[in-house]
Image 1: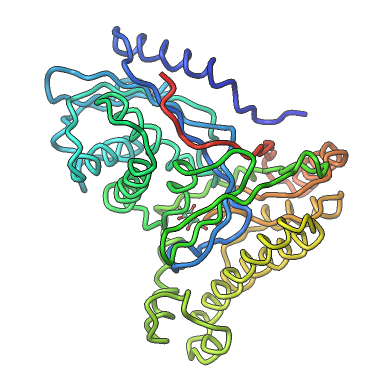
Image 2: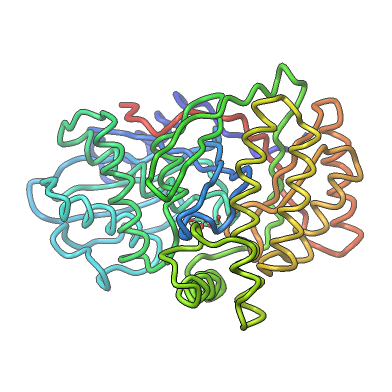
Length: 391
Ligand code: GAF
């Protein structure tokens, strides 16, 4: 099967080291890796003070860094020509464009948090598909944050991980300009292997929910529709604004405090549907946690179906390619499927009996070809561990 492979961490570390040498003609001093994610359930609930249940992917971004003795900052990737070049003192809001803003933004946020950083050379490389709704931006931010901390010798304890989550969120919202919540940075830095992470954005607490997929004969299949999604586009911000308008109209700090009864009284029909999605989706996260804990996979499938319908009809963030993926996967034997991530393209996640995996992948490929859609890409989401310094 043509899956997008995660690559072996040891090989990717060496590739990143080699790339650094090719670009800068010197040696990397610290290298860190940070995973992308797939969210099992809880979409657009993070910035509403709600619950989410993401899983870290085995696919990760690697960042290699070395200090310089001037204040210059250079940022390069394997695919780009010349490195972006500026100074470490001038990478705050408004100063950097394009993908380098995620890297510069993180270094700015770390310095704002009181972490002293030298000028540095940075190379990034990895296997998280870009623009697929699998959190390549957060993987980039978190890998750079950890590599920079490795460079200055900060011990990577729980406290530092939480500080880095906050810094990476500030980088994304204030420098890269994507008004996202904190799910993607949190799972990348706090994930636990073989588990999903239940995160409560009411108090930022989190804890693992063990996922015994292989003993249940199940595989988590992710299908990237190759309809590129971008969080800096207007759709995500518009959904967030609708949710904030709903909370304002209800007089609550966030929709976490709303109920279906209170939401039913909202006068604006669109805002009412947006808020209905959030209130029902937060409840669905708890339902999935209970079902996973009880090993009731059929119940997980039913909740996935309800979640997808809610995102399609009430939140309006699905697209024909995502709807086709979900419908086809279930027809071909998946226990449940739903779109995942910010929406407007990107990926779907399906819970598939492993013996049906090939059939589901084939059915989705055939359905895409028949509909005249671009061929999708698939990957297997083995629940993986958190970002780490690897060299
Ligand atoms: C994107 C955002 F970055 C997250 O914060 C979250 O809102 C998600 O979309 C939707 O659940 O990944």
